[in-house]
Length: 141
Image 1 (tube, helix red, strand yellow):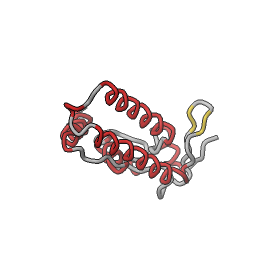
Image 2: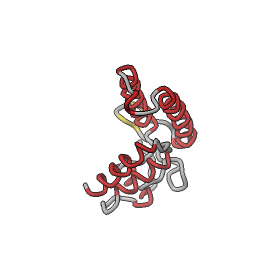
Image 3: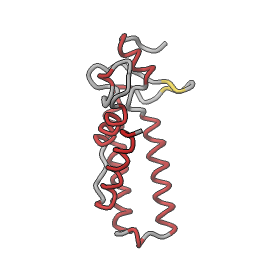
Image 4: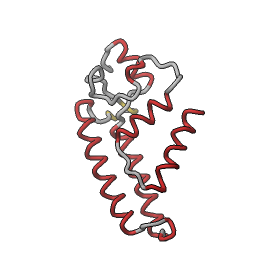
């Protein structure tokens, strides 16, 4: 819980300064939240699927395959560009929290939902089951 709180504290500190998010932030958040936990393959922590050692790590959720490992980097770049484009427009429209109206709040909630859905679709990190498979370098059935 302490590691998660540290990530949340950093987010809270960055928010008033309107520091821009990057997928590298997410990589660091995963490293921090996983710190001290036992994982099947520690080299997977903070590594995106498709990177060295995780080139052949694919995900399946239910009966739907996630983004192919080979496409994770490009999908993350598109995700980050889309997210930053919308955030820049919102920042221009609402320069301070005091300027935020109902439409702005709805836009922020919609953006958060869209960002979450895209992140889940891309699924850049290997979970514990995938890490175990990576440790033995087996592909999913």
